Length: 374
Image (cartoon, rainbow, N blue to C red; front, side, top):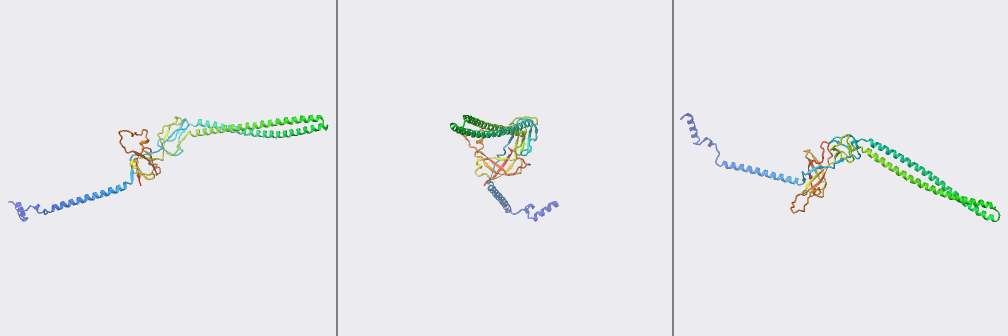
């Protein structure tokens, strides 16, 4: 036996004949206690995780039940169709596609030459009609003066006729007593007849003067009507001249520009569209979500185009009916094979934030509104 084998034999004898690795093993009862401890730790961890999850879900439910949300929502707006109000040749186009414009900003200019000439003609017609009216008023003034003169002449003729009649009556009595000659009586008779004839003539002249006054009044009314008609034509010419400058009715963004300098445009032909800055959200909530949604409740709006940005608004109104009921072809439910489907009801949400030029909103953009219900 070599020295290595002898050394190992001595070591085995010192340890009581056991294997060295077995000398460091714990007693037989250590393994069950360690395994039990590990199970207890694992069970405790599972209980803690489940408890935290239940508490988290509870808090989430308590908070989430105060909100109603939908992803069936879009930006909506009344798109303004821009069309000329007069026909003509386009001389200038002052905007580009997608450009932002202010209210009353000129978008397109139509050649104003023809409309300027019509405006000048209408101005001259108004001046002529005004002169005719002035002449008619002057003629009426003259006619009224003639009528006053004729009325005065009638008064004089009546006085002369009365005086001549009385003189004839007196001389008729005196001629019987030979205080007045027959010649004087003949002269009185002639004077009385002449005065009566003058009275008739003066009255006819007064009647003619009154008729002239009526004619003058009619002429004045006709001249005034012609003046009003000329003024209306002048106003129409002024409007047509102003319509050669197509302006933006309100601030917004230009889209679908389809006109160029040199084009001939007709009245009512769409040359572009204008998307106003004032937009809103049309959210199609399920009818089962409407029980707690009320007008005025605050809304947080997430826009797909601008992730991480929240827009703020409020519920403006709820449509009294589903969206399908107002479609072009509403569904016919009176059938034998009816399947109930939860309907969508449009809810109008108005944005309270002012328009952001760096984040423009346009019709059709997808959004996700979240309503904070009471």
